[in-house]
Image (cartoon, rainbow, N blue to C red; front, side, top):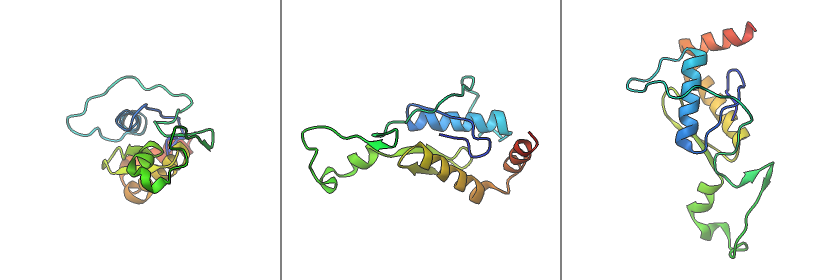
Length: 132
C-alpha cells in the first residue's frame, strides 16, 4: 500500500505486519510519536507493495476450487476475509479495510486527513513533502 503522505510503498504479509510497517514509517519518516511500549522494529524497506493476503492480484479476482459456483452468501465471512486487505491506523489503531492495496491506501489517506489532519505530526509531514 502507499503512504498517504509521501506515497512510499509500504508492505507486509499480514495485517499485523503491515500495521507495524505503517506505524514505523510514520514514526521514522513523519515524526509521529511512537506509542508507549512500542520500540522500533526493523529498518524500513521500500519497494513494490505486495497484496497482504486477498485473492485480488493485478486487478483481477481469482477464485478456484470445487465450490466455485457456490453463492458468496453461503461462503459466509471467509470469502470477505480472504479478499479484504486490512491495516490499523498508526495513530489511533482503528481498523481500516479495502478490497485491494489501492483502496486500502485511499481509506488510510482519508482517515489520516479526517481524523488526524490537525495533529502536529501530520501537518509537519505534509509541509516536508511539499518542500521537496
